[in-house]
Structure formats: C-alpha cells, structure tokens
Image (cartoon, rainbow, N blue to C red; front, side, top):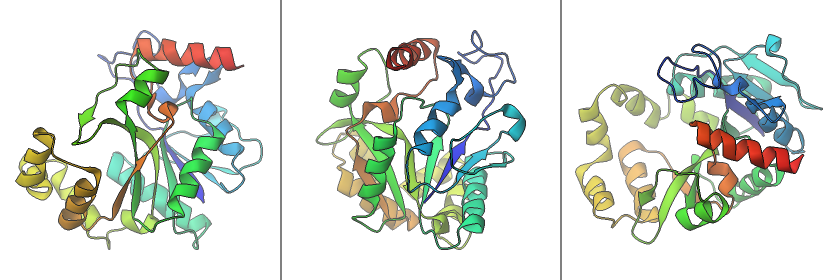
Length: 258
C-alpha cells in the first residue's frame, strides 16, 4: 500500500498559528520538537513494512524531508481537497497499478505511530469498502488529551470526532466513480450539499438518532460511496495541530517521548 500526505496548506493572515509561522508558510513544516511536523509522520510511515511509497502533495525535495528506506515522491498542490485526492490517487496508481487501496494523511497529526497505521491497514483487510474513515469516541480522546478541545458529533449511542488519516480505493478518486462528480459539484453550493446529504439523515443527526450503520447507509444511497466508519482506539489519530495550545500539547508529548 502507498501513503499520501496532503501538505499544501499555508498559514493565512488571520490563522491561529501565525505566532508560530509567518503568513504564507507551509503548515506541514511547522517545527515541533526538533523536526518539521510532517517529518514525524514520515518517520512513522518509514517503520511500516507494507508501506511501499510515500507521496507528498504540496512540498518539494528542497524542503529537506527524508525517509529511512521508503521512496518519497513529491507532486504539486492541485488546489483543493478533491483535486489533491485525485492527484495523489493517480500518482499511486502510476507507481503501483495493482494496489487497490491507499493511505491518506493530513500533515498535522505528528503523534501517529507505526502500530496505529498497521492497525488500520489490518482493519481494511477484513472488509471491502471504498473508504475507511476513523471515528474516535469522546471518552477515548479526552482520557488521553483532556485539554485538546476537539469538536464532536453526537450520534445515537456515542459522541465522536474524526481522525486525520484513513484509507480509500484509488478508483473513488476517478471521475468514473459516481461519488466524485457529485461531491465536486456540491462543494461550492450549500443547497446542493443539503440535497445530496438529504433532509432525513440531517434531522436524524440533529436529534441524535443517527447510528454508524445508518450514516454509512445514507452515504451509499446518496453518493454511491461504500463507507466504513472505523472505531479508532488511538486518540493520537485525532490530535491535530490547528491552534497554539494544541501545538503545546503535541510538543510536550514528542519531547517526552524522545
């Protein structure tokens, strides 16, 4: 399996991280505990035997990143989430046409470790889905990082936040898959977004009646996307760095682990 890291995001004028980086700087290169933030993820991926290639979107070789034994490939930022997913999937298939799944990471979860990645890869082997999306229960997140202040969604039987890495089939990122054109068309229109999500599941979510199975069912019905929500036992998968206090939490963790 190949791994894609989306690293094209830059710090904006009013960004909460402007005290740590200058506007225009790449967020992925934020120094934490002696390394760029993204390097911690590359180091974790380097320890996963079944990861064959690392594809980085939005950075270049001149940024000085390195992997111990995995080839690292750089491709330009394609301009948005959907376009970057397509570009990353295309590159993965160019490198290994026979690989039917690919790992996807944001560049701001430096606490992930090799065993967490291996765990998700094993989970993806017990079912055949288009997309494997991590959800982390609030109790798990706050037991590990009580000051993380994550945003949560309340389901019928649990309260969860999303993880920052997952697995998808490269075919999902092609224009031949029914989901991608619908998502691309709707991303600029709130009305279209509501239309393909549907009023019934939206109300179910608002009134806390939505379950994981129902959410997956609605996504498949509306988008043709076979989604599996994967309950993740690792809070680190959701400990991203968006705010200075989150940076402090992560920095402390990494320095203590060195």
